[in-house]
Amino acid sequence: QVQLVESGGGLVQPGGSLRLSCQASGSIGSIYAMGWYRQAPGTKRTWVATISREGIPSYPNDMKGRATITQDAAKNTVYLQMSNLKPDDTAVYYCHANLGQYWGQGTQVTVSS
Image 1 (tube, rainbow, N blue to C red):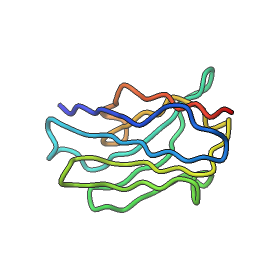
Image 2 (cartoon, rainbow, N blue to C red):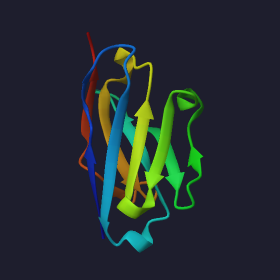
Image 3 (cartoon, rainbow, N blue to C red):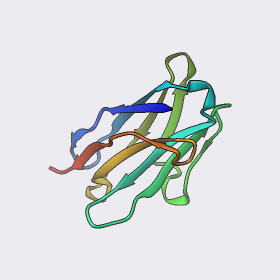
């Protein structure tokens, strides 16, 4: 089993930036990828970014240039940096491992003035 704990959400002003963290514990050796999805109220969960165990990032087209995913293998932690935030970025951001095999509890990000 893998446990994921997110942190770093909160209220951000439009145009601002955020950095989310997700720390994994448990069966770390079974993890081959970690990343982020997000879900706004009334919508389905959508992919934000993924990073492989080898440190190779991938993003959907609408996140390229706005989101950056990095990892600190020594801390079993991945980070999501997003800039130029817009109200449409308001959502619960979920960390995942192994493409949805494991999920964190989510952290709320609200972009509002």
